[in-house]
Length: 237
Image 1 (spheres, rainbow, N blue to C red):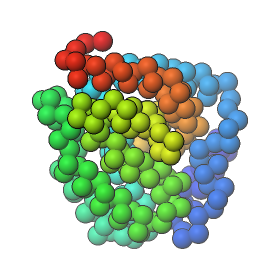
Image 2: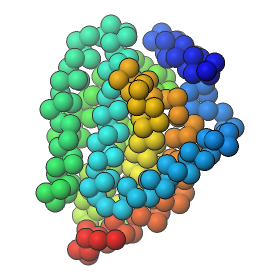
Image 3: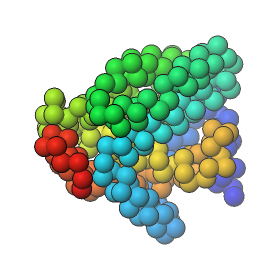
């Protein structure tokens, strides 16, 4: 209960220009995980394995992750009295929400340029108004990951397997699509009662464990299967 209240207090502190450097540790954990957190992470990792078995499920998770990040960004814009920018992002995202999923279901894979253009602008607005430190702490920087990963991951044959793998799993510098969407899927389903208020980082330590497992084990397993599914016209796993 104390930790929960501390997290809420930390979120209030994030509205200031000078972000407490301890906020990241308080929200995302200090690499010391309880047995319950590890158990929950194992369960969520198994769910991620199922979700990464076909492109529609990947698209749903990617869309959900973007929706969550937009919610976090908009909530913090309102808290900082950037009402115009908050309403603008809310309205524009509402018009795009779900189009990623429809594109995959109709097999126009990779045709996401409007979403990518919008994500680029949306992120620049968030960083300009909230600051880089806040965006990093709230993981709004993941919008950039999705922005650059989605076109490659959903048009794998065009870019080739190596580029697909780097964008889906990870490369030397950036997080891949699969770990990022698995993180967000974990934190927003941990306590849905908090979602409407924009608070769902209570389970970020669990999300971090899931993200790590997906990066190191699940995504490398799923990547060749997804690639072959599209590029060799094999549509079942």
